[in-house]
Image 1 (tube, rainbow, N blue to C red):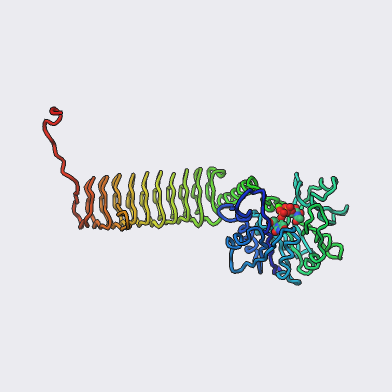
Image 2 (cartoon, rainbow, N blue to C red):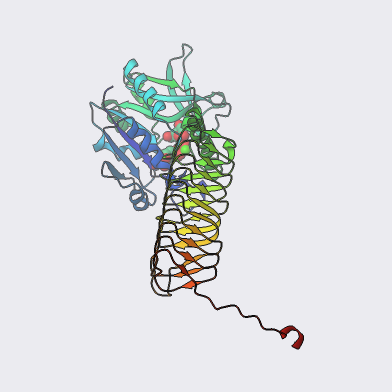
Length: 453
Ligand code: UD1
Ligand code: CA
């Protein structure tokens, strides 16, 4: 395929979002909508990318700054044609120019490749994507002659009653020959209902000067869905959610309740893993095979091995080995490395800690800033006391230690191999190997006390 350059229009304000944030920076699955568009163009190996910014230009530029992307400023939003004029220097006569909108995040690599292939095959001066919509209101209508040849695009506001009924609409995605686009832009006027320079008017101009124009009718109109309001943002998010979930199911993941399962674009999931309802997988998360995740799980930037069971828990920026059991109601905070066969049970919080193979932390425990070895048992209510009110300190617990219930390990402190910490102890000094450490008041029995009182 011939190489092409891409222009993305993103200067508009997006008033219907009713937002302080520029429309194109509103997110779907934690990615600004314009970045979905950029990704699709990059996935098709666009040679160069230029974004037309205007409203809150700096904010938009900062959000998407990438070395390979150039920007041009449209100071006044005088229409889509005027926006493309600002990128005149970017347009090369002998190159194809793909034009996209920053507010159509559902665009796919496949849909763009279809247009590019159609453009090449027909050798058109300009090719556009059209769609057949039951309710074509608000769009540009595609007018054809009785042989089906393209005649022009007429904007809804400028259309006659007859034209308004035409269900074939302009999706707003174009592929131009650079030379045709340049010439047509120089002839564009703003003599229309909105007093704007309409990009689609270039189609008629090109046709009249002897060029060829045709529209590829898409079979998947959802890919070209343009977002103008938060209601449409939610609709588009739901479409993307379906697409993502479907891909995982096709790859061998069971998703019990796709409507309540939210998986970010970059997440990977192994075969035969089951996602139960209300599971949210965010960021750069990867999950192995044969896991059961959920119900009610939220994982952010997690690496998880095979055969892990995790229910009703939150885990972030950490790694978990194989055959680990997490939850219910566990909280794995950043920088934890949890080895194979560990159990982190109910109401347990772990932070910035390494937990060795086979260690059990079954319930009601806080483990923070700790290096824990293998086959340790943390009793119910045991706590690593890592904060002295000023600084954080580390705790080391070596292999095969038994930490009794309700023990405090006051850091910095080391418990050496094989030792036992008596329940209720507050340990402030290092404990050597294979001993029992008791640090609590001795129990007394006071005879006759009850009678006296
Ligand atoms: C446009 C098309 C219409 C098509 C529809 C598909 C025109 C005149 N009409 O209408 O044929 O059916 O898209 O969704 O093009 N923008 C700028 N600068 C401007 C104006 C717009 O950068 O001066 C950007 C906007 O930020 C937006 C995109 O261009 O990303 C589309 O603009 P919008 O006003 O939404 O066009 P529509 O009225 O939807
Ligand atoms: Ca629009």
